[in-house]
Structure formats: C-alpha cells, structure tokens
Picture 1 (cartoon, rainbow, N blue to C red):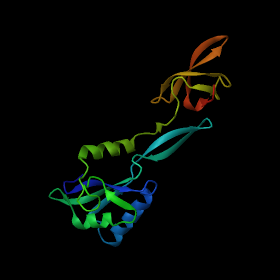
Picture 2: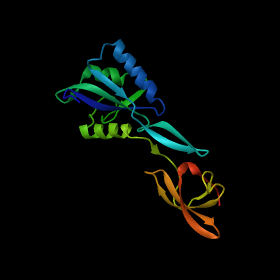
Picture 3: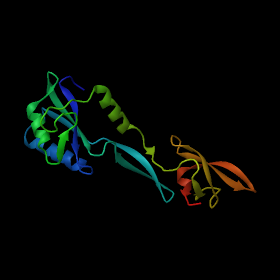
Picture 4: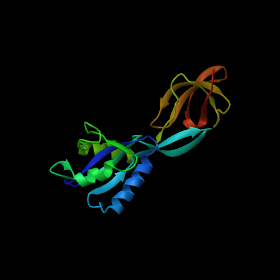
Length: 186
C-alpha cells in the first residue's frame, strides 16, 4: 500500500455489492479516474456448508452491504473528484466514517484494519455448521451409519465432532466428520 493511497468503506444495499462494484469500475474507466481510484473490492471468504451429508464450498461476503475502495489521498484527505465519483455511483448509499453521510469526507481504514480484512479473505475455507454440544444427530456415513447419538464436542478447526452412540448397550464416543452426521429431532 502506497502513502498516497488509502482504503475507504462505502455502504450499499445488502445483496447489491457486486452490482455497485461493477458500476463503480465502469464509471472509473469511463471518467478516466484510474489514476485516483485504484481498486474496488467486495471481501469474501470461503465457507464450507454440509448439505445432505455433502461438503459444499461457497464464497460468503465478509461484510454484507459494504464495498472497499482504494483511492488517492493528498495530505491525508480524500481526493475531491474521486470522492464525488464514488458517492454518486448508483447503489452507493454513503461512505462509512463520514459524520453526515454523503456530505462530509470519510475517514480511511487504518493499515492494520486493511491487513485484517484481506487476511480473512485469503484464509482457507472455514466450516459453517450449526452443530453444537447436546444436539441429537443421526450418523449417515461411515461404519456407524444409521446409529443415532448426541454430540459431546465440536471441533470447527478440524471439521469433526465427537458423538456418543450406543454400541453393545454402552454409550461409546466416536469421532466423525461433519459430513457424516445429520441433525435430527429427539
């Protein structure tokens, strides 16, 4: 990141982030602002869902309703023309960090905030499951298929759970992957 560039956050309607990103990129190109507006990003992270016992990786917006824009600054203040182009882009509701919405100039993100956001986007896929200790589940894969039991421990980092299942009349803890279980009502 160069000293004459800073990242700013703009607010948009949730679900319109990509459209605003594309509109802004087109406006930057058509107005010849490539030397003042450098990057437009919608930070996403990869998450893993388990649907019907299958592992599905998909992108998820880190900050729904927000778009990041890297713009030129002079003396720590946002470039007036670049600010005008961004705030008048269809779908942009305001800059984050401006006290009166579109009227006052916004505050840029700190370098540490920018690093945190982009580091999160670069991480490998994280499991997004709604399993928690105490949930009653049915085993749908592996050697314990068709057994039912209760979750005693969830490890999101490893994508596994410990479930107690009745084996030979005794509750036995077994370690299973998220994809091998399905939540059921007791």
